[in-house]
Image 1 (spheres, rainbow, N blue to C red):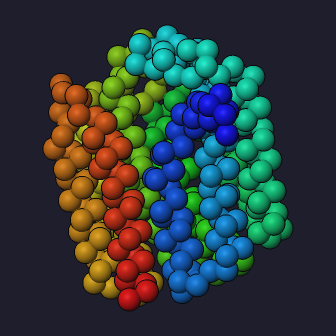
Image 2 (tube, rainbow, N blue to C red):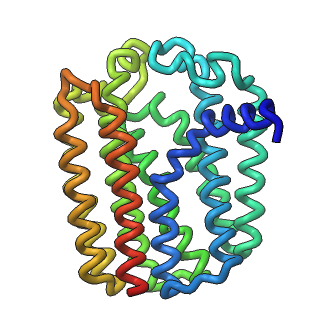
Length: 290
């Protein structure tokens, strides 16, 4: 692969924040493994992984396209790929279309019902890009967007609605609370800019201090949901240890930040939350297989 092609691939990976797949993918895979008693077919496993990648690629590319003018005006984001000229708006929109088509194709390969459910799922993912223009609950919108992944992965394995779907719904709700909580913290960086532009977020509505208290509440509820999922699916001591470690990472995340000091936001946002997802997946796998 030539350097030019590699650099172009890295540019598009940066556009869609490919590294942030660490937030949703582990929970989707954990849900899939539990649903199949640890033995999904290679075809099912591959399709679920590709579906998650395609869905978040479409969502992120469209988010960058929709926010291109806001990103250009915000000093924190003006060096992103579209404002800096590394990727054109048309290219981002084309990537959105291709990734969306790929996602729907993968859904069809999973089952016709997955395809039907994939349509509103895709609409929700793309719609998030405009949520902050009219709602301070945009963080929950994002949370639900990521929380859908464990529910969808479980449904891809089962292929039907029924009582077994309650467990992944609990896991999905827990992921939604966790994601919404850390997105509130992340949004604190832009509260002044968002206020000036008439955008909505909990930091704009409640101030940083109030928003951080809401984030703490969400992060108290999320581990309780993780525990409930483990109880519903028969996961035991190792998984419980993973939930305890996850709770510790959430506590550490909140200790890193203060309303007047966001200097450690990257550690709080990516390191703590990426580690949490990996810890939960690893603990679930060890418990499931051993």
